Length: 138
Length: 126
Image 1 (cartoon, rainbow over the protein chains, first blue to last red):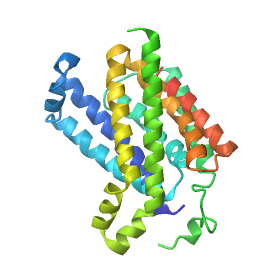
Image 2 (image 1 turned 90 degrees about the vertical axis):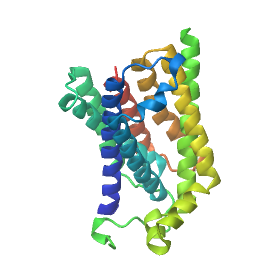
Image 3 (image 1 turned 180 degrees about the vertical axis):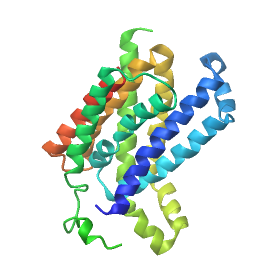
């Protein structure tokens, strides 16, 4: 794994969680939309926070596609699940939610899963072993 | 709406979102390292390779199905059940599907990691 690849994984985490936070914040301002008036969902896009959330999630999608082009799905998904941890922390700092003991246990479980998978290889199909950061060609 | 139909919707969301992720992964693997393609042929070539890839288009279809499935399930049950249930189950089904359809080597390390994340997500949203 090169440092650039870690940067792509980090942007998946950051874009996904900030995008979700922005969407959530925007939709709380828009208010509940009933299924009978589902067309109001299209108007919700005009809310600046929802629009920002969509832009951030587009950034997430670009980084996700890039990561899948050089990594296994079973590597990318657990490795980027730190986003759930970041989402929990951001919802405390930005949205003022309370984090209980059970959530900290969840954060610990997700983090240990991430720690375990990122110590292994990132891709199955390789003609040569993945160079370590020391062998970074860029 | 009954619990059975909620769980059917959850199963449908999990299945379609797994299909979407696996197809997306297959498309991107066939296209190859996008960073290298970008340097070699430009951003236009990368975008064209992605949006004209059949697996990518099929992936988009399944992702749309899972999104509308989610809206449907949310109209029947609480978000605190639907979102964690689908998110954490998807880690396990993705590991199975990646092994079966993408022939990824899902070793003990990856299984352990998928199960830890699955449990963690379930606890986080509880």
